[in-house]
Amino acid sequence: MDEVEAGYSWSAPELSNDLGCRHELARAWPELPTAVRTAWEPELRELDDRFRAATVPWPEHGGGVWWLDRVPRLIEVEAGRPCDERGWPQGWETMPFAKPDAVRVSSS
Image 1 (cartoon, rainbow, N blue to C red):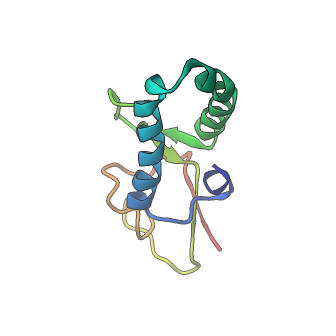
Image 2 (cartoon, helix red, strand yellow; image 1 turned 120 degrees about the horizontal axis):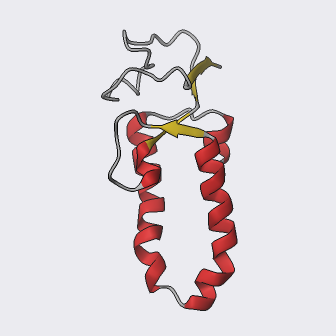
């Protein structure tokens, strides 16, 4: 979460990989003992809220799980890295839509 809030500096495929961890947690969550879920629910809720605040909805995407339908608000890239004609920096050009105005690309 700290990386997403500070400016995600990895690529779109890496973000997808990172979100796979959240997906696996959701899959396993119902199998955990009630006491474990009760103890960890507030922290999970806080992290999910932080993720929602640090990301924007994936345009015209949905129907899946909510955390896979979001894009970081701030993408940190190396200085001088070019953006494609849709506004995405290298490593993000696989995104199937133009960069939303709410997503900022910042050079380090």
